Image (cartoon, rainbow, N blue to C red):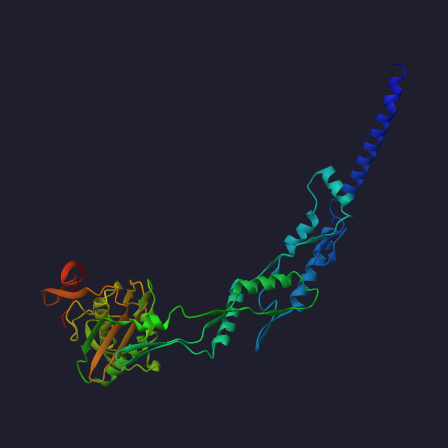
Length: 413
């Protein structure tokens, strides 16, 4: 027993000595490097090893400021070549986050773990991720500009109405820059400018028309209405003709809503419209684009006979002469609109024009999905200035439903 203790004491002493030395080494390395970047830490090929926070800030900020100032992207596709600096695209680098990442890499706020990580950091190179922000709005704006250039000479699809037949001529596909692909390409380049190859070949998407000539070849007029021009006012007729021509040929896809006001666009003197009689404050006064509401009312009735869904409709303040009370519709730029929804399974086409024999005409073209259905419009007049309008639906000659469309009240002239 007397000899056993000294034999055990020697190994224990050695272990304790090693532990003390290790702890001292860890303590020294921890204190020397706790406020510095560990070895083998790189950011965009810059060695940040052993640098203090202030040094890292100076180096990183200058490096990425220079990167923004000195680097450009060259975007190409066939004969298109656009050069944009990083400033032009408002690309920024998140230097604060990258500095924080550099100083905290392999640090866990634990004396022993951090000391071990520092001592082993010489073995493996660590490349920090470059953090940046791409201005999506500016990139979208840039893509839109390229899209316009790509499509400036393209042949557009168009509708033609010939001898009571509708013909659809398919144009060139719509070309557009692949936004996601472009964003990913920019991100890849921002992570590696070392090769000074900043050219990006734009990926272009082609969107062919979802419509086929076969669909249009099956179309017939499913709703039609015409109103007589009440007088020979040349300017009023001019306004109606411009308005109807602007709307004619519009394709409305299933579940889409058509807006008369939005589709017709601006209606001012510079657009060819003239002052003509119109209603204002319960009076008849000359107004630019006066008379177009006859076109709106004509379309409204064609839409009813086509059995489409009315989304928005407003009557005139006073009675009009071209349709009976309860069957008129008006619009006012940016204030009052006439809207309807294509509630069919197939596309529909609006045809609208002023005929040579003095009629305002509106036709709705589509595939007749209910050949045995007939629509009738019934208007009750409780008084001269009031009306209640109903849409009656018949199938095989039998009334299946009656929908109340509106109750309207008009002011006296």
